Image (cartoon, rainbow, N blue to C red; front, side, top):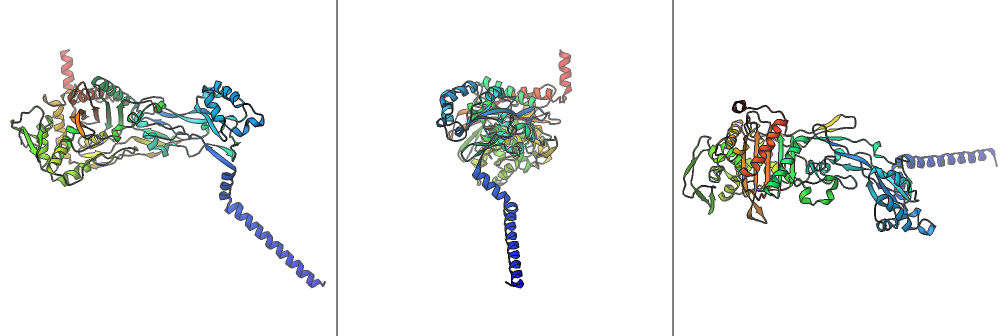
Length: 579
């Protein structure tokens, strides 16, 4: 073989090796760099299984920083049957179950059934941390423990329907816990890794595997004031028990910013033990349930008649003892059929006249009437942000005169309590309606505010009409014949409207009522809206005897707590002189 041929062979081999190495390195680069993450995930899915633990959640605090919900550290016990199969000479199932039973206070039979399974199983989750020492002393092959987060509500029933509750995996199931979960949950997932056969591969931190203390979360500050919430809950509970009502609620709103200072309902529940209660008690029915508002709707009927120029504030409206609208009888309580009255707007509101309200409201074109009610917030949800809120029922057009008549005094239309409060806000706020707010801000792990929630404001009435309505609603309380006179508080001026509405049950009126009072105070410089409602009171019927005295008690306590100065000091001075 000559030298030239030999050199050609060497050159060919050299380039072949170089080419082979380039192909190998290219393949390695492709697999280890470009496809590395995809292949890693594929390998993990084939080689190990992730068991999710309860995610850690951030605290929920009230407007003053009081803790309403937080996570606590618990210990959970689980088994890996592959490590203790009896045929491998391990401890018999019964003996294992008996040892475990003595530690965790569960039935031997139930434990034995769990540990006989073929794969990973939880034996008991989220036990008090005091079980730790005994659990660590078990030292049974295949029986291991894991620390997890568990949601705790230190105030028990306080604001339960608002805050909501979480499930076994710390997932939000209702209220703020569910609706604002994305701000509360930690970004980091906590897991145990096992192989395809259920054998454990990884436990972090040895004695403290995946401990929740290693994970930081956001904090949610809500608008509720713990003290005002307590006042409202206490008085509503007393009212429900006194009047033998099915249920009751109170909503307190700050007129400056739309903050809900209290949203109280009774019966209530303890979210630490939510599984003991049915949904009728667990739900926040201030946003989930609808009812016919009755006479409180007259507030908005008269306001819209004034707003559209169909009624003059000084007009005297001829009101017979009864009228028929398309064959439907409309009458007023305590008025004879043959009686003729001339009622001004103040009289219509003060005496809660169905006839006067029907007459003046039917002057408004139905399309305009419906559009203005929608603008006030009826027939749609608020921007509260709580899951489960319903829109109520604002009937679609066309409206016959009889339909418009019944809607004017609160029948044939269905609302939620939160809609009534939101619509009312326009009157003390000079015609500007404000959306309710339940969450103020989100605070990160370093104490920095990372998100602030603001309430939307919309002009729904002119300032002139809002002021006129404020004066009319004040007369409901101040006048000797006003239906809300029982709310008077010495030194302060209250404005509001009563409502005693027949309750629809299974499509018919069956004798029960919804009694309510919707008002604000003090009139001279309105700070607070308060709404009190009782469902089916039995010992008393009318709102003046049920909702009114409870409203007064709540308002008196709030005025003292918020240190709102009296606006009628002369009343207090005259009282002191008499004493």
